[in-house]
Structures are given as structure tokens and as C-alpha cells.
Length: 330
Image (spheres, rainbow, N blue to C red):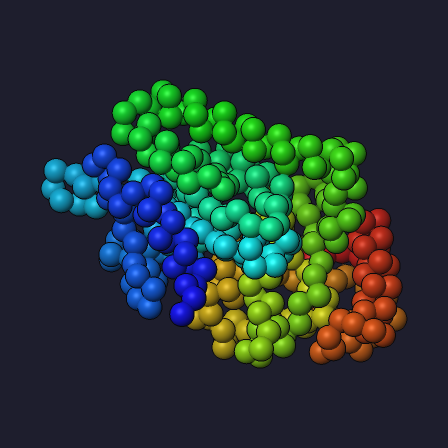
């Protein structure tokens, strides 16, 4: 039987980095175990911040103090998505798993095993911005030797550790900047316009095609996409308030999901992430009737064919109306 992606990642970490690195020990669970879903403080691999649980990690390296307490030093979330057809959005969907550790002052690693596709440069920018904002390193890694080096320096030489991490992150950030400058000519407004985003001095609006079916039908995994999209946008602009606009949904539908999906991991992250607010079509002041009718006419439809044409035309108009201030997201 073929190994799952998670099991491949876990075995590679232990084989390449080690079950023990100096005095640090790896906490990792075999395939089939649900112990990783427990909070780290309860023996698991999930980190919580602000009463919000983030996704479980694949492995953590821990130190044990004189009283026998287990202290997390590094948390690693890994994926084999680059070998499994994931050239785009799927790369963002597990980004937040190690973010929970970073928010608790623990070094976070998102390990993307090398495959047929390349790492999206945006990931380097997101991780860099998070590291600077919270003062704890978050690194995008493809070489497990980087992880081992960080652990060894963490044990032996703090000054060299900081130098190593700073150099590594600077090099990664340059990859992000090269892509940004090439694709958007170094212009944040061009970046925003191509990503369904409108920038204002203290906030931004990003619109998306989410509808209620995405969160209520088991065949759809758009909750994962919405979470990845949220973190991508938030940590591209970490100091702006983020209004996440879903014009195919109503306020009543948002309230329905609040009531019936409160225990859903993705919905909880979307609703509880600081400085992020989900907005519906009912939160648009000044929206022309023809645009409201257009969004409502395709609110349950898959976006293809005629429905996609309606969506594209309506959002193009909406983008300009929000940007000019004729429609306001409240």
C-alpha cells in the first residue's frame, strides 16, 4: 500500500533531521493516529492562539527543562503537494498550520517537498512579513538540511542562528521581490487589481466567489481555499484591516454558518482571524440594483459558462465602483 503524503513527510523528517538532535527530541505520530489534533500542551501537535486552534503540524522538536516540562522549539508542517499537481492555490492551504506555533513564539517551518512544481514566491513574502511582524521566524523550506542546521545552531550559538535565519529569509524574500517586480512592475496597485483586491490607506477589500454551498456540501472543499486565500491576502498586507467580500452570499447566510458551522475548523479560522471581517452583498452601500440582481442570479451556480461570464462582468464593475468610492463596504 502506498504511503500517504503525511507519512512520507514524517518519515523524511525523522530520517534526514533525526528523531533526536542534541538534547531536542522529535514529537511525531504514526499514520492513523489522531493525537496530532490535540493541543501541544496536551501532548499533541496543534497550537492555539487567542482561543483559536490552528491546524495540526506533522512534527515538533522539543526541549525538556529541569522540571520535566516539554518546551516546543520548532514546529514543522509538511506537504508533498508539489508532486501531486499543486502549482497554485493548494500550496497556501496548509500554510496556517505552522503559523499557530509562530504566534506562540515557536519557530515555524512550512516544508514543501521538492516535486514537479515550484514553490509559489508569494509564500516567501508571507513568511517574511509574518516573521517581521511577530518577531519569530517562519521559514518556507525545501531542504531538510536547513531544519537540522537551525536546530543545531539553536543549541550551540544564538548569534550564528540569528545570522543564518536572517540570511536565509533575505534570500527567500528576494525570490518574492523578483517575481513581484517582474509581474507587477513593483506596483502594489497593479498587484491588487490582478488579485480582485482594492487598496485603501488603512484597509483593503478583497472579493471572492464563495457561496453557501462551499461550506455546506461535503463534495466542496472551498473552505480550505478561502482560508488559504485569506492568509495570502492578510500577510501580503499585514498592517491593513482586511474586508473579505463575498457578493454571492447574504448576511443571513453568514449568520446561518455562524450558528451551524461554529465547530468547523475552516469557518472558525475565517471568522476569528484578527483584523479580518467577512462581508456579504448586504454590506455594500450604493450597490446598483442591476449588479445586485446579477450576483443573486448566479449565487448557487458553479462558475462556468454563462454564470462565469455574469460573474466576470459584475465583479469588473464592482471593482471600479468600490475603488472610486461610489460603493462602500460597511
